[in-house]
Image 1: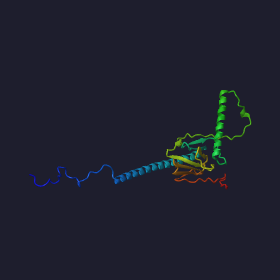
Image 2 (image 1 turned 90 degrees about the vertical axis):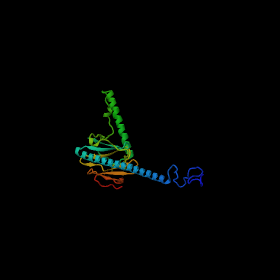
Image 3 (image 1 turned 180 degrees about the vertical axis):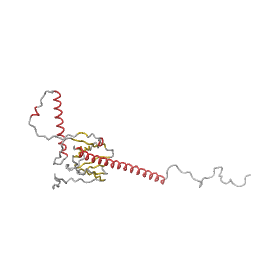
Image 4 (image 1 turned 45 degrees about the horizontal axis):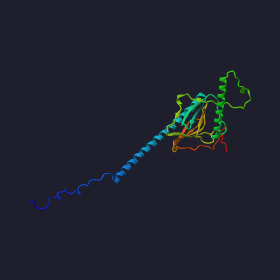
Length: 259
């Protein structure tokens, strides 16, 4: 005979109630956990972006220093060899290299423009075609005489011929993908040049063109400006864009021309 009601913790044969004894949590994240995860992801992305920027700035700085060294070397090389040298900058291909000539070279008094460079390129192309045609005629008929050589022709000054620079110290350089040469300015240019091919000339007896070279990242948000000093060949590097003196022009005696 059972005395009293059901035993403690039993209700009609069912398991004891779990109320207040550690409720099972639903699956998923709480709002606080989500905020923590998003914060960590944001911090990781910030560190990654900063690392990419630091890497790009490192490439930009290294490329500027290397270009500065090439300019200084060509200045010294022209002084010691007595030959005209030039640095060739290909803006589209993001490359530069050195060339040398045994001929005399003079810079005209008129400032170069986009149109004048185009006309010069077309004139060179015509001369190359004429020479190729004459060579082909001579090869086909060695006994033929080119009578045009004995006819009066318009005077054309001899064009200076430059050839590739053979020294290992200045090999053709291709810039990193994160770096470009954004522009070049010398006193012979009417405006800074940023297309086609640009040139910086170095002369015997220790003299070069005054020039400014603008090296930047691909988006042109960060600039380094290389300022070439003509009498010493020294290159001063600024970690910013330095406005070129477009409106300043000097005569052969160094006197500024007033416009």
